[in-house]
Image (cartoon, rainbow, N blue to C red; front, side, top):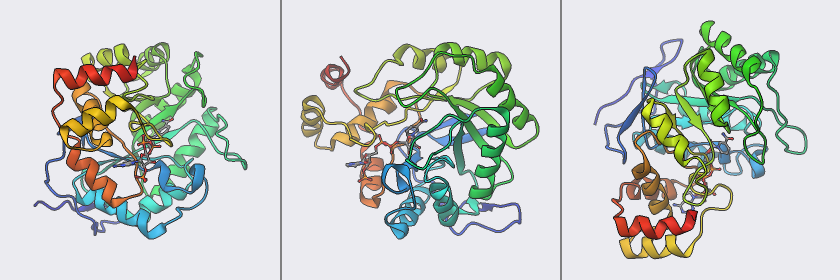
Length: 305
Ligand SMILES: NC(=O)c1ccc[n+]([C@@H]2O[C@H](COP(=O)([O-])OP(=O)(O)OC[C@H]3O[C@@H](n4cnc5c(N)ncnc54)[C@H](OP(=O)(O)O)[C@@H]3O)[C@@H](O)[C@H]2O)c1
């Protein structure tokens, strides 16, 4: 077991240490940062519908610490979760962050009193949200920041030049190490890359939602990570006869099959499954490395058809 030392501006060492335990999928480089392909999505640690504090504060702390102790080095979040409550609990559980732990956040939207997700993508909005993430996570610079586009229905075709140029400026100022896009179209990815390089695209994709199939392969060819959000189906986890039948045949859980399928789908896919449960986290890590046969894959293809 190797221990990671904390990285904090004041030189404090982390009390939560990473291990060299092999996680399914190995690692991937986000620019100069190496992350485990098996990551953790923190969104649902906030209260119901991602508003308010965690329902089980100690449980949220425990699951975050377990993730890092299991060797996970990729945590996905946003100051808009809660808002701020998810970042606050990440900071409480993990700060100072163990060496090698990468916290990926996103900006481009805010929250209203009803729990809606209004767009906020002017240069001033983005600067404010970067500061909000820095403050709540307790960092001097953010590792990776995705610009969240589109709306709740999905990506929306529109120019992102003004917003992405503002992100590039924040990066040049040293507040952000690497940039990415979320909920984006192919044209927006092209537009962003003409401004400055990106390391990741975070769009919705899972066994049942596969409209980014061609995009994933294109990004893989260019060494850009594809990070599916809602890898397990989101608020209503995936359910299907084919998933149940394949998982029963393999003697595992449907969630393990869904995650194994993603890892096997393309080497540039990084997982950020969410869970509030240490038991589910352990189950997902243990089960995500199953080799799916051609027969399994053909049966699972019925879900996305
Ligand atoms: N960019 C964007 O616009 C965007 C949008 C949405 C989400 N995201 C990111 O994507 C991440 C993942 O999304 P998500 O957490 O909403 O959805 P998800 O990972 O697809 O699914 C999470 C759900 O699956 C359940 N689950 C996990 N493991 C399980 C298991 N072994 N057995 C049974 N149920 C299990 C969880 O319940 P338990 O808690 O009971 O385990 C939770 O309800 C988020 O954390 C966020 O960082 C990004």
